[in-house]
Length: 119
Image (cartoon, rainbow, N blue to C red; front, side, top):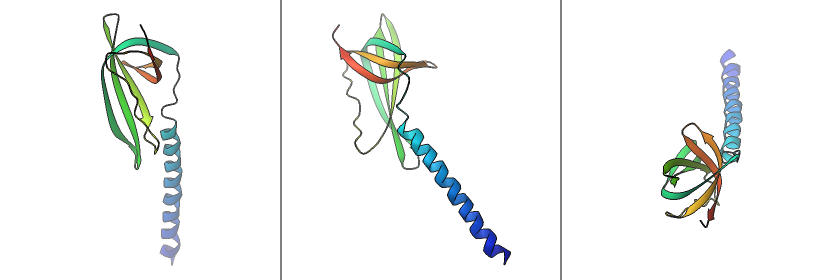
């Protein structure tokens, strides 16, 4: 008799908990590319790589890594975007000069917007 009450209550508890967790991660996933654009970096693109990674169950992110050269120094940049139905990968051409807006995170520069410049 006790099992008839306790087992459905346990299932209900974990169902509600997992729904809340999924909602929280969905919100984080959508806002992953909303970052502070406190700094600008200008440089010539040397290499770009793009990689799709799993974020949470059916949610994926695209991580674009860019290596630029600026004043004889090499800088590593990263952009992270949620992969949605209307997602298009960033079009960053090699050998061109761009302005990247973002902030420093550990040993790389994390950017969200970029614009090609003529230098």
